Length: 312
Image (cartoon, rainbow, N blue to C red):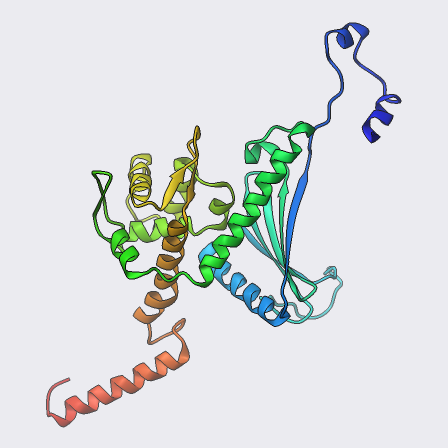
């Protein structure tokens, strides 16, 4: 082995007594990368999927960073005007979801493949030990991260919540004889909870009361009532009774179920992309056709009231 070759050359701090007691060099993992590449039969479909993925992560997934890699250095002496564009010719977009010391990186490779790379900088992030003998376990868990993230993104492309499922979530129900409180759409706390659960970082490594609480508090804003540990416990209980999360055995960590992923993405998308713009449909960010149609409707109603000789 490469390591054994150098062990014979490096100064040895271990004495013969140490060797006799069983002490010796060992190998550990500093960084491990596990990747998955999905090649599309039709590159155009792959580009559409990745463009939708980037759009989702700008407002739904909220990754820790989105990088635009231009392949050239910008120095103080570089001339010209520089502006950021999400997707354009000659620009590679990279979406990163950070979890503790590790991250998952995604990008569209060579114009036809979706590349997902889980880079583990600390084996403890995924509950593994650092010794090389644990490499197989670490690789299996990293592949599971890739699969979970990909499944979460596929849910985001078709997150319709069927009527029975919506009613079960949005109304109080009984689960195993216990009352499961409602998660009502539009409630500020529920919407902040859904938005936090849609975060890619929680999909990668799961979440606990400690990691979920600051995300929900940030979405509620400084003017809202404090999102305490007790309130977070209550919300975790609601999610569990509704079958939206499950607890990993022997830990305080939860992961989203398929229904939980659909709940988080559906609630967040409907609120952020439909209701919020429509409630302010007379001005941006509402789409221009909607604003124009609203003005036409407003004029028609005004004329109708005037013809009836009614005060507007």
